[in-house]
Length: 189
Image 1: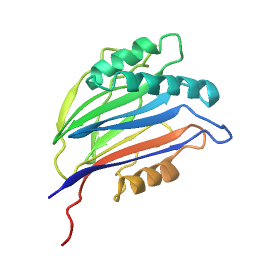
Image 2: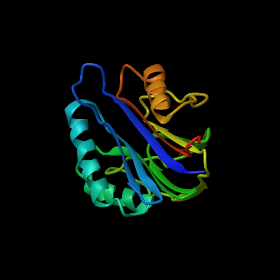
Image 3: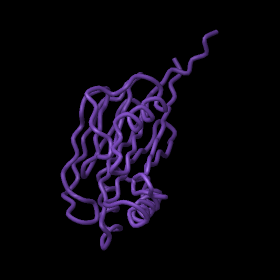
Image 4: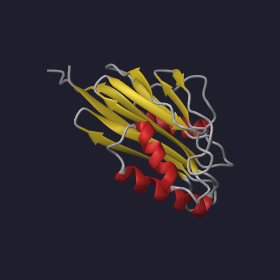
C-alpha cells in the first residue's frame, strides 16, 4: 500500500468583505506535514493583516513543534488583536497537536480540545498532545465561523471542507475548514 497525504482548505470571508481573518497552511515534509488553521480576531482587512502576519511567522518557524510554534506566534502577534490557532505536525503514523482558542478539531470523528485564550493576547501555555494517525485517518479543523457538526462529512478532503463551510458556515463571520487525510495511492493494476 502506498499512502499519500491529501489535504484541502476552504475559506469564505465575511459576506461583503473583500478579505477576512481566516487562513490556513499545509507545509508537506518527507514523512508528513505541518498544518495550521488560523482565525484572526475581528473581520475584514484588519483581521486579514493579522492572519497574513501569522502566516509569515508560521513559515519562519515551520521546523518547530506545534506548542513551540504557538509560542513564537504569541510573541510575534503581540500588539495586535491576536488570533485563535490550531497546529498539527504529522510524522508517519503519529500526530502532535497544540491549539489555542476556538478552532474545532476532530481526528477520525473524535474531538481534540484546544486551550482557551488568544494568541498574541491572553495566551496560556500551549499543551502538546500526541495521537495515532494510521493509514486511512483524517484530521479536520474548522474556525468558529463553522458550526460544530455532529459528524464530519465523508469524502475527499476537498469535499469535506466545502461541505462544512457551505452547509455549516455562518453568514455573520469568516468561515473556514482544513482537512488532511492519509489516502491509498496504490495503483489498481
